[in-house]
Image (cartoon, rainbow, N blue to C red):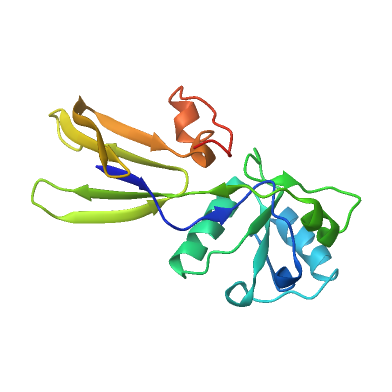
Amino acid sequence: VAAASYPTQATICEGFTIMPEFSRLALLASPTDRAQDACDALRKARDWVPLEDAQAVVVIGGDGYMLQTLHTMIDIDHIIPAFGLNLGTVGFLMNEYRSSRSIDERLAKATQIAISPLRMTATTNSGEVHSVCAINEVSLLRETRQTAKLEVSVNGKVRMPELACDGVLVATPAGSTAYNLSANGPILPLSSN
């Protein structure tokens, strides 16, 4: 297993400093009724463009919808700043939805935090190579009754030459409140490396 920082970055949570070049904003909302109602209200506040044409995106929903949006941007190779408005449960990756300021004012005052997804490359016993990008975490679990023997490399450096285990979990700071936390891992600040 090799987990390495993926070369692209996406900005989440605290938002970003809006500049004139971010005049084309996309608006995306999760399919929940609350998020759709909020989207309808925000849609009236300004002109919005499709994600593919945007310089930044406002994401309404929860952490899961933010992650889905970030993966979509990676998949379409259009990585732009994202500002999340929480109408989900936890909202670790999101900002408060309610505010007396307009969305443009909020974006102008936001602080930028960049995240670096993991690129996991796994080679099977038969030599088959699988590669995937992960924003939250990468986890591997054994599929047989035998103990798995894994080599763990991070950024090209072997960290564990042989790990005999049932599985392994490598979490990003963005993923530290997900599977990592339920496995008793620490919560990491989004700005940590």
